[in-house]
Length: 103
Image 1 (cartoon, rainbow, N blue to C red):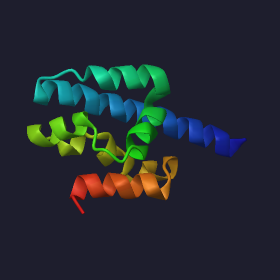
Image 2 (tube, rainbow, N blue to C red; image 1 turned 180 degrees about the vertical axis):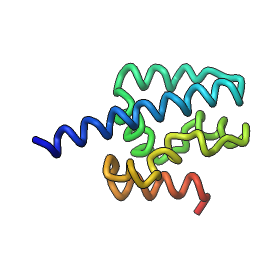
Image 3 (cartoon, helix red, strand yellow; image 1 turned 90 degrees about the horizontal axis):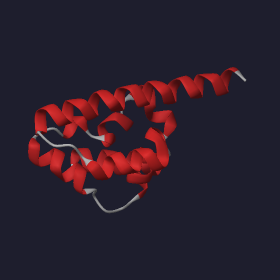
Image 4 (cartoon, helix red, strand yellow; image 1 turned 180 degrees about the horizontal axis):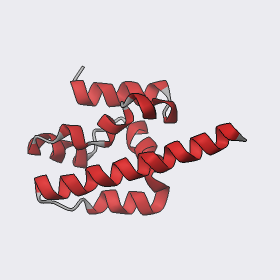
């Protein structure tokens, strides 16, 4: 039971941090990612991150962030934070690392 509560708390913290990144992206990149909003409504924050990381194609939103010089505001960067790694599979983390570091 305590593990489930910790998982829920972790997911809530992930959501809060994702929203901070989202707002920062809007401010710094002068864009409002509508497709990302649709995914959030459909899958929720953690589900959206997993969906994006399961897709072998690089999402257009990630490309936009790279072009804006804001790679650190990506779902990929957030997923790689030590406190959130347990929310994702090794394959998802590997894909996030590959996108962030280009290997």
